Image (cartoon, rainbow, N blue to C red; front, side, top):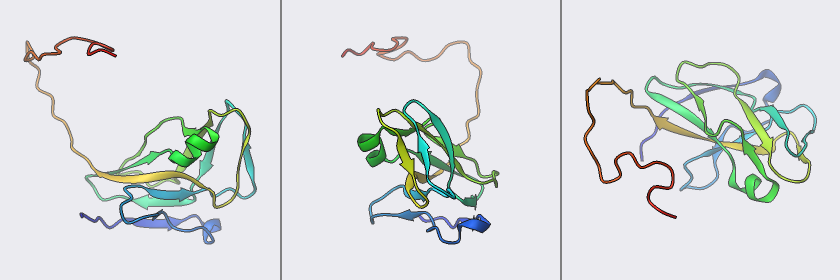
Length: 149
């Protein structure tokens, strides 16, 4: 398994919160924790930005994707608006998670609640080549639903 070294800094008021961590040996995502000073509620249909209380320095050629936690989604309807969120290698700001409550009941986030997961990926940069025609495929220009139900 490949490993990459990532520098991390905690927000001054977040010394008590755990660092992002893998919850099992097979996990691809690390849990991120809510760095709220006091409990905060997300009402049904509402969006709230919640700090993870950390800053990271990714090496060039890597990105971090922020994804919803499946347990929060199925139990409470909590998702991430811009899922997956992307943290680029040159970003050094505070990591915040844009949560949405798709559920039917208010959801309370307390300090230290696991609110999202972060996956580290290698990045491939594209170079475009302008052509007059593209090669044909079996699907070719078939759009949404083209391959059946």
